[in-house]
Figure 1 (cartoon, rainbow, N blue to C red):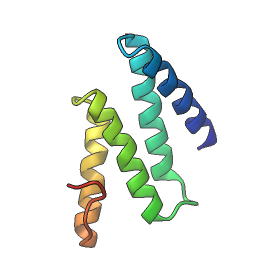
Figure 2 (tube, helix red, strand yellow):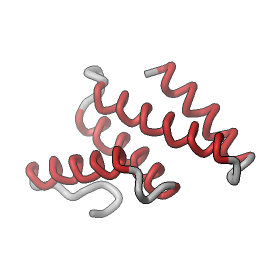
Figure 3 (cartoon, rainbow, N blue to C red):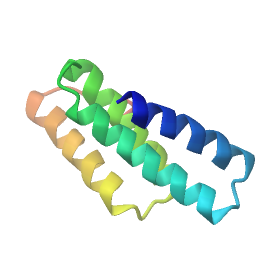
Length: 93
């Protein structure tokens, strides 16, 4: 996950510096999805850390690209998990 975090940090910085650059945007979206996926797959993280952390990252992707299928799929999956647990979705539903 450290590699994914470092790639995300670099891509986020580059995208913030050049938000109209398609290459920077694509890298930001890809690395954000990768970090979110890594968060979901990290067996060392408790679900109480894993799900809200990944959800926040997937929402960042959708904020930048509302049509991103991967992020939208996982947002809905995580919302479904919270519904099954009878818990509120972090950041609202």
